[in-house]
Length: 390
Image 1: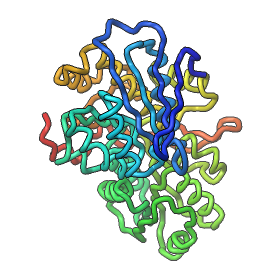
Image 2: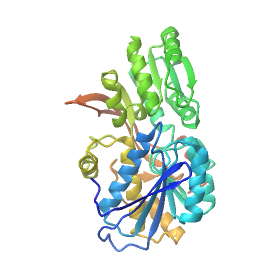
Image 3: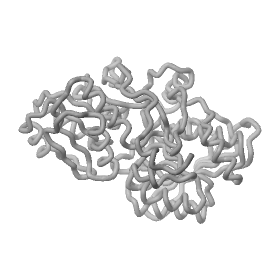
Image 4: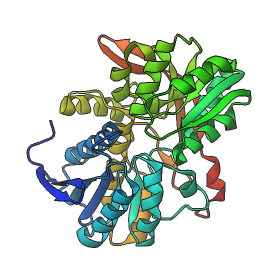
């Protein structure tokens, strides 16, 4: 487990629960002054597993660094935009944080990020990458350490095309990331659409959509339904007896979800910029130490939290956060050992990276993924061309 030398203080704030962690471990490099990080993420309710994994990956990296100059204050946004905005204002005005991070959901990111960056704070996204913040709405203080929302779906479209699917039925929740998902899939898949459906965010009953799929004449199904939505859909789809192949992004086939879905997910091919079998020293160590600390395999979200913390730590080793120009330049350099291997930012401060095709397998009693191919190589999002940053 995480070292007992970490100080954990629980406190209440409105409807949210706050977890403040100030690490008191050994020294780390020379450093350039203290940094206070405010993490707003989803720790209760639907989708809580995603936020928990981001938090745990982030805190593992901080703990391993031994850096005594970083303080992390963690709050639960309950997947509610108004709560996230309230927490952001509190962290900026009362907690005096230097950096914000942690948001899982794109609608929450769109509610928080523009205000935070306008107030001179850095925001580092470990997950949500909405279109609006990648193109014309890019900002010098906004960095995305995960991906732009379309990317994993673009890879799924490219994979579907390469596989020969010609009549896909596609569905996603009706919120910014869901809209980006279907846009991304269609950008690289050039076949016909047997159906295109937006579901309700948080929906758990997919009987109507499955009936539409059955009647559609589709030769394949693409869906983006993160968290519990994906669990519900996959179980209901498996029970329906429909045998059309399914393609999706990692969000619906990630480590925390697979154990709940079980055999219904076996053999499904999905796209991700990370997997536990990426062959580099940083990733091997991350998988091993995460499992030792938390008693479970890391997920995509945990890997993104881990990389986000290590990016901050790498910048702290080079510059003082109070010197924003120098700290920003240090972040842009991304001089850290990513679990993805080589890591670099594009001009809009989103990653340029490989995106892989994974297949769901079973190792002993554990459902997991293995990489079977690369869908897109050194891929940059299309919105970077609209961003005015160099």
